[in-house]
Length: 337
Image (cartoon, rainbow, N blue to C red):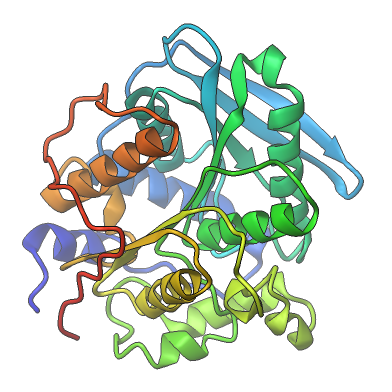
C-alpha cells in the first residue's frame, strides 16, 4: 500500500530523531521538534472552561496532573489521559498532548486528567505506572472538588501511554480500585520483549523501529526479567477476564499493530467487550495529523464517540470533519502488509 502524501511528508519531517545519548539532554530538543511538527500538521485544541495543574502524592512519590474542564455544567465524566513517548519522553506541556486533551474534553463533554508521569531512566518501572494509578485514585477521591462523576471514569493512552493505560486497568482489577467504563488503547505497545513487533511484517521505515524502541525499553526496565511482568507487558497477563470494555486502535503501517490485535483478541476470548479498529494507511504517529490528513480526523471522531458512548452520551458536541459509520463490536480492518 502506498502512503498518502500527507503521511509521507510527516515522516520526512520527523526524520533525524535518534536515541542513545543522555535522555535528559535530548528531551528538550525532541520536545521542540514535536511542537514544530504539530504546528505544521495538527489542529490546535478548542477552548475549554479551565485548565488547572495539581500535584498528586503517593507512596512511591508524586506527579503533576493537568485537569481540563469543558464549559459544561454539573458533575461530568472523567477521562484519565496518559501520553506517549517511549517511557522516557513526553509531557503534559507538549502541544499534541494539550490539543488532544482539549479535543476530548470538549468533544466528549468530560473532564480530562492528563498525567505528567515520571520518566525513565531517572524513574524506571514501575514509577510511571505508580503515578498513573495514583492519578486515577486521586481523580475518584477528589470527585466533588473536581466536579466529576466518580461512577463514570475511563482511562486511555497513546503508544507507551497505551501500555500504561492497559496496566492501570489491570492494576485496578487486582487492587479493587476505581471501576472503569472503558480502556482506550491507541497504537499500544503491549509486549515489551518486542517479539510481537518483530513478527508484524512491518519494516523500520514508518517512524518507529526496533533499535530505538529496544533502547527505550532498556531505560524503562532495569532488569530483563521485568519484560514478563504483566504490568510492564500486558500481553503477558495470564487472565484478562473482568477487565473494562476496550477500544483498541491500531495503524496499518505500524510495527506495533499486532500488539493491539493480539490484546484485543485475548480480551474477546476472556469475555471482555472489545472493538479493534485498524486505520488503513496510517503509521504510528499519524493520528496527530488532524490539520492535513482526513483519516486522522476520523480517528479523533472515533475516540470521541467511544468516550461519549461509554459515558452514556450519544451526540458529539464537537464538530468533526469526517463522520464514521457505526462499527461492529469487534471490527478488524486489516490491510495488506
